[in-house]
Image 1 (tube, rainbow, N blue to C red):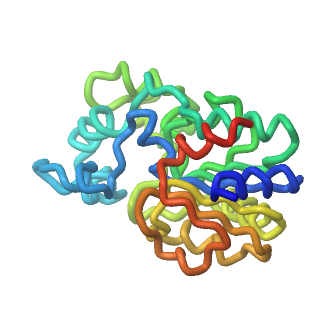
Image 2 (cartoon, helix red, strand yellow; image 1 turned 180 degrees about the vertical axis):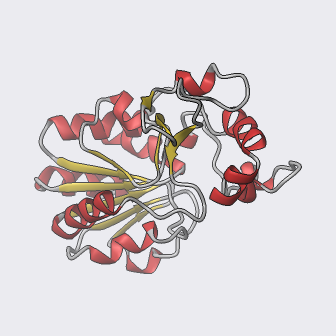
Length: 239
């Protein structure tokens, strides 16, 4: 039995699959990974990307923050790939109970997934930091420079910047789903970003699946490890 066949069997036998995904789920849709060799962190800018997308930099230099954010963080034309689409189908079949993602691109929702827990927020949700009014993505994309609310406040993306904490409600829900999962599939992440990577410690089952092109920090803990592109794996599942 191949690795993919075993994964398919586990999914077919389970009624409680949870998926936890990172940047590698979106790279096959043309969205660059921050930490890969040719990712954003290895490119040269006036400031390091880690600094630009920090809370303190956003407060001190919003013009430069939004210039980088609009050029390098938003991909409105990206389309869901085979992994996104398969997960949405599995949710409709009652198999996948939750998709937990570190990505902010909204591709799981575009594919049709409904119960998506976005640990790091979403580019599609934005709000005025003064009055709290909600805005869509267009308010940021169409702004000339720093996007402003009608009240004069700055419109901030609902994404978790460096130095900011994760949403406690989203974290609690993620812990709940992971703790109760029969099969936990982790894909497209090296499991090095905390606190998100620590969530898998809550898994109590014996069907932990890791799908990632390169080695991860938790390879030794996996019950099934597939070192291949995640879209390719889900396409082969034919589900």
